[in-house]
Image (cartoon, rainbow, N blue to C red; front, side, top):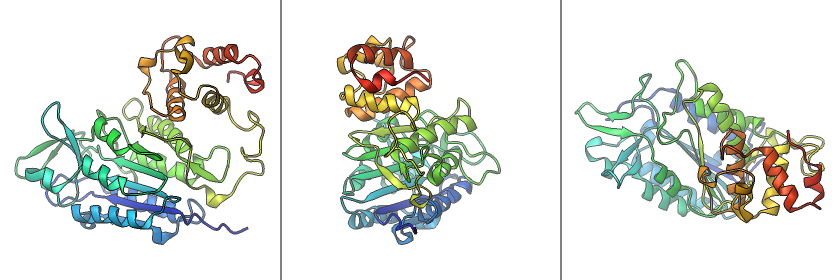
Length: 366
């Protein structure tokens, strides 16, 4: 059966490598945008309508053009659509200590007048807020090292310098709103790597693999937001051990929404929608779904995390229970969340609280 595609998918993809007045970036930055656009538009992968995928590269990515592109995206996208915004280029930290902000550096940005020639985080957040889609995913890859050199500074030929990167505060600002999520290439104190000779940045290499089906672990026919981040966050450290860790932000995300089709929408003969819990999914996925059901307010609900030996202060808490559990279990899977908590201790506590729960009783530690 021929796929009907994913006509509700829209994307604005922006990449700048060759700046007019700022230090340049590797050509992989432009390849990132081109390859993400091709993957989203491919009928064998994400199956977006090609007319719904807009790219702005280098000279096209002026401050005015990026803001206009966001306005046009907001005008085209309806509440039931899915929207993706992808930026790859320089980010810069501006403002005084204690009152710092971050900006996206467009191709026409001038370091001598950066606040008026770039896009501030509050300005970008306001533009994103105009997009009425219930599913909005923003990708920010704006902490690059300049060229092959590891540098945390932006420079021009006039002696101006700014700290490179994008702050935690700015990331959080961009994720505000129901159904909105942000995925960034690295933590605020890290550099987004481009390996010498590679076609794509490390982050986009993993992202492309995820979008091309690797993130759809159980062949459901969809690439979903939590699954995509899980894949990217696990693959990037394999390529750059201990040096780069993608981050995920969501202020009010209630569901693991679909970002795109997977392999054109092809499902396995027996997908998770029709498979009894635990037979197709791995133990971590089953535990997550059960904890969301039983402790809907997150790891602090009934003090389940603390009673299992965990430390809530080691978690990045979210106002939404589902997002909080997703983040907490990912942290636990990576060895964090407290010295004395484990999959087994968390499962044991849940079984003690709900001794008659059949699915819990069947679940075993991996």
